[in-house]
Image (cartoon, rainbow, N blue to C red; front, top):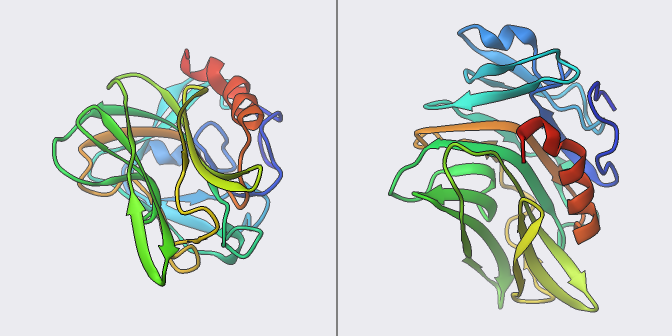
Length: 238
């Protein structure tokens, strides 16, 4: 993989990785105005890139500094790729992860921070939502449990679906603390895992910084959440 600053994150099942502190992912020219090419450095399809007009901000050497893309009216459409799909053909398990900082918040629904429509994080005011959906009795159903977040601070967020001794549970973590542990339609397929595009910072979100965003085509354990959190927390003062 192309990481200059860290080699201890979980790589098994990694299907997409954006990291603003890695120049292989975000060119230094992203500090200028205009459209920038952002490269996936997961190693799965490293030639793939997306574009955004979000500006690179931060300081320090690229190997150790803290960098992020600031999204205001900007978006980044990651798209869809077969490698993003769960290793079990999408029936059960995926994971999304990000380091993000809400700068300003809005009181209306429901602009994405990161993910796809039926497996994503979005925020309303100071509340973070983990939206997840399944196909149940031939129809799509979903819910979006919540937790509180603080504007102006960095947060490490993970959402996953994991097999817990034969029961499929949606789980989510905020700064290495599990706040969601819910059996929801165990045994049903994830909804629209195979044809929904992933993206960051839907255009209606007023301002959010995103430094790291990853997707895994498998579930994450609590130990793996801890591993990724500890690997990069020093960058964000968490």
